[in-house]
Image 1: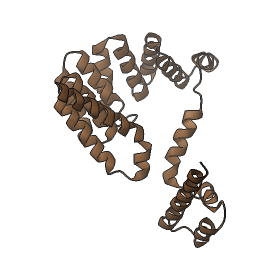
Image 2: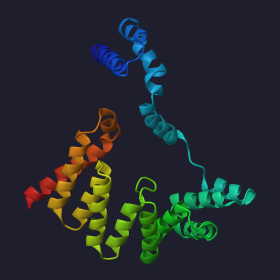
Image 3: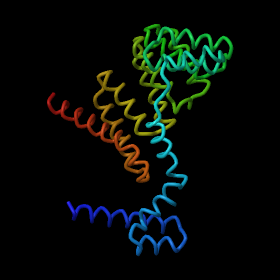
Image 4: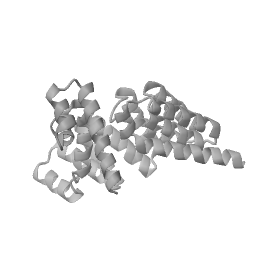
Length: 249
């Protein structure tokens, strides 16, 4: 155990030293990291963690620790201050709590006063999809995809594809997801495409999508690879399952 701890300290020091050299940090930091006990940790706290490329990780960690407001507190907020923003927040809270009918009604109220509110269009579409009113879901989600394709990091695309799939148009769902991976080639998007391919019984195409997504993942900078490690493990697991199934058949 002591040896492993010592090895971890050596590796951490080497990482911080390489980072300081790559960033062209002040020369004194190189000496501090190399010669002062705890110098690497000091560099990490005062320099590395404050770098712009570390801010995304910091924001995600903060968001994961911040508890969202309860539906009851959102109701009280709306009663005390009846604004469109508070109504939208309650609608989103209800949707997150799976109260889709009430949430949909509130999203529609928001849209009567603010017709261009993409959060409300998207929320109404997702609620309609969950409630099984597919035509309404299709209309709302298609509006988001057409008007603001990158809304919430392309969140409306897989929802609209799911709507197409449930309406008996799997080819259209696959076409939409294929367009998405061409527009924004990322591992998470290839994972979604692979799942739609598999649901349509197209195992070979699903394997191809996973392989391409993993290839893109392997070319990412190490920070991005670390951030998307869970996605990569998921993709490898799916790929292993598909290959095993193909061999068994």
